[in-house]
Image (cartoon, rainbow, N blue to C red; front, side, top):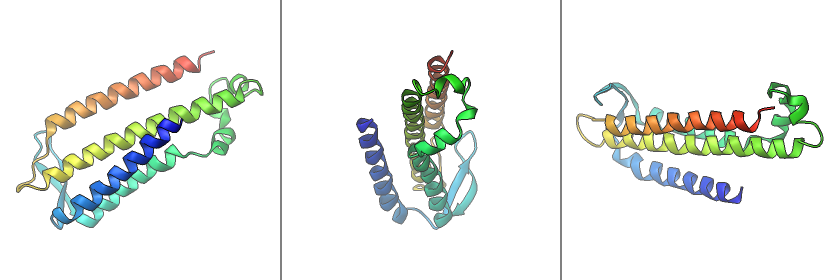
Length: 159
C-alpha cells in the first residue's frame, strides 16, 4: 500500500510539473478534440482546457482516497455482501476493495496524464496534429487493463 501512495504522489507531482511547464507554451485557443487522423476539430480556451484536465484528474485523486466509510455504507452493492462484510471477512474485504479502487484510479490518472500530454504536444505545432497512433496504442492497453481488472475483481469476490 505504501508503494501505491509513493507512486500516486509521484504521478501528482509529475502532473503539476506538466501543467506548469506546458501552460505557457500553449496558444490561447487550444485544440481539444481530434478526429481519427489526428486533425483538430474541437477547440476551447487554454483556461478551459486546464480546468477540464484538473477536473478529470481531481476525480481520480478523490477516487484514490475514497473513504473507507463510503465502502461500508454502500456495502449492499457488493455481490454476496452478507458473506464478504461479515465480521470475519470485513477487514480483508475493505482492504482489498481499497486496493482495487486505488489501482484503478492510479492507472486512470496516468492514462489521462499521457492523453492530455499528447493533446498539449499536438498544440505546439500549427496546425495542431494529435498522434492518433500513440493514442490508439494507449487506449488498447488501457482497455486491456480494465478487462483484466474486471476479471481479477470478479475472481477475487466469487463465492
